[in-house]
Image 1 (tube, rainbow, N blue to C red):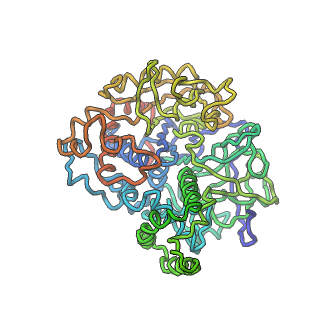
Image 2 (image 1 turned 45 degrees about the vertical axis):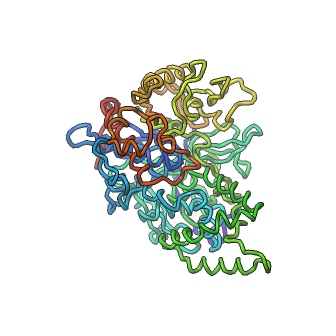
Image 3 (image 1 turned 45 degrees about the horizontal axis):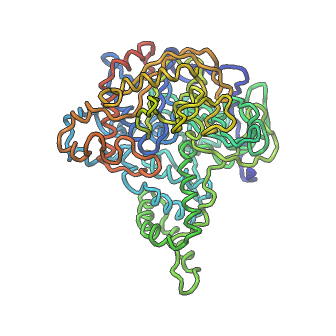
Length: 606
């Protein structure tokens, strides 16, 4: 939709890339030893596992007063990884970091059933232990639609109410429209306000202390070579945009996408005047791009699922009473706890119900708003800003729909030396009848391979006329010949089928040029892969009553630790505590490998 006449005029900085390499040191306070942690997608499983991994990095010290976490330069997050990573980076100083990460690390042998039954109030994972099933969120979406939340903002609003409001990171005005923005430091904020005094009235979220630079990964719907594909969007502490120039990729306006980013607050706007000499641009904008937009878009796969479920229910109204009516009271109570005006919602809800046909039981909620939940924003390319033109919205998708590890985006910065990739996968490491190691779908495309298929194993994308998972076809950043050594090493590290070891592998890799993600070729990087998989030693260390709660090692409750991305959005406090304890234990137990990686890093200024 075009930007309305009520929009304000703002001055923003452009960050064009062209043929220039991105350097993380140009945007962060760190000057050397660039180490980026990647938190993969995977819904509530990824949130919880990531919480434990951050806790583990905070627990392990590199020296007497330097935690490994304080040495992380950047945090590249996708989908469920963004659920934990984005609030962590911007966590207000008033919230204890220990509470956010679920309390101090506890050796698994010291856990108790009573101790794992609850979580600290400010723990990020405490917000996925109730009111967080798909049915709950469907009810919340329909109620929010009654008070004017636009359909394409419903998912972002829901995720903001759950995961950002508790930390003061989602403030909203009428119709729950965000009225805040984010940037890096007080210095970057001062520069923004100097150019835009009107933003003094808005809340500005700043990165907490020495927390890492944020790279939140989102996907932009594009058309390339008559195919529907996705282009990578980075929403960072400084800028947001498509930093590469994906060959032949066009947005909803027919414009070639990419070429750089714009100050994050000014993303989703319309360019009105370009000042090329100073690399500034004047934009017209209804509101500023906020953390809720970044987190919600990064995890938009769930919006697509809710839209599909809502569409199905609208065609089968007899399913409404059994599925949604029972969820309405809980949804209203949840919204009330998040300071939403439920009286207003109840008034609108009564009006909807009273219009039902005589003699017909009224629906609990009106599902008509659930037909267009995919996030949409006004995107325009930095390489050729369409100044003065009408900007139609383009759809945005889950970052994992394009690249679910966050590795490719991190490698767009050519000075990154080290990567820690926490692959918080749903797929169990296994081996097929041909001795082919099966790993999560997110890994093979990084080496140019299609995800594993039964009967054929792994096939290269190159030369394939009908590839499996075509959205991943532009994700190769490493040589294909390095893939099999990784599979072999991961399988051996895990215990080759008995899960007696931690599947961690350190690889020295050289990048393959990738114009889709703006990754330079022949870039040397050390990558520590950490694959989510059960480990017998952790299980054996648990007290027997907790082992009984989990069940046998080979068939633990809920397929622990591989909780379903889609169907297990809500986890119990016990499931959360145990999964986070396990992933923290992995870091603590294997701390020598982590310290070795950080030996080329440097502590960030506090």
